[in-house]
Length: 278
Image (cartoon, rainbow, N blue to C red):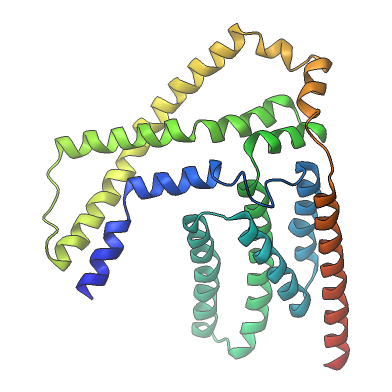
C-alpha cells in the first residue's frame, strides 16, 4: 500500500501535468481525426452535441456512446483529459445515486441516472474529440468559414499557443514558492499525504500571480499585433481567402460522414426494435 501510494504521488507533478496538457494541444497532428476537414467535424459535433439531449432511449444513447468512444480513441487524447472526464461524469452519477437512495429512492433510480450519464458522456466525448483532436489553427479556420468573428477564432488559437508560456510561468511561480517555503517531510505514508496537501495549497496560491502575469503577456501580444496591422488584415477579404484555401473535403471526410450516418441509422433501428420487444 505504501509503495502504491508512493508511485501515485510521484506521478502527480507539475512536469507530468505540463507534458499532458502540451501533448493534448500539440501532439495529435498525425491522427485520423486531426486530418479531417474542420467544417465536417464542427457539423458532426453539432449533431452529437445536441441530439442526445432530446433522446431518452438507453439503447440509442449507448450506441452513440460507443461510437464517440471510438472517435476519442482515434484522436489519441491525453490520459489526463480522459481521467478528468471519467472523474467528473461518473463520480457525479454515483453521488446522485447515493443521494437518491438516502432520500427514499430505490433501484429504479438507476435507469434515469444511466440515461443522464450517457447523455453527458456522449456530449463530453464528442467535445473532446473535436476540440482536443483538431489543430488549433484548423479549428479557427473552420469557425471563420462558418461566419464566426475573426477575433473569436483568433482567441481560440491564441489560447492554445499561449499554453506553453502559461505552464512555464506556472512552474516558475511554484519554484519561487518552494524556495521561500519549508515543505513537510515526505518519507512516511502520512508525510506523503501532508506533502500532497502542501503541493495543492501552493498550486491554489499560484493562480492569482499567474493570472496577472498572463494578462501582461497577453497585452504585450495584442500591442505587437496592432503594430503589425492585425486589425486591418482580418477585415481584408483576400487574407480571409488565403486562410480558408487549405480547407478541402477529401475522401477521408466522406468516409467518416458515411460511417457516422450508418452508425446512427443502425442505432435508431436497434433502439426501435428494443422498444417494440419490451
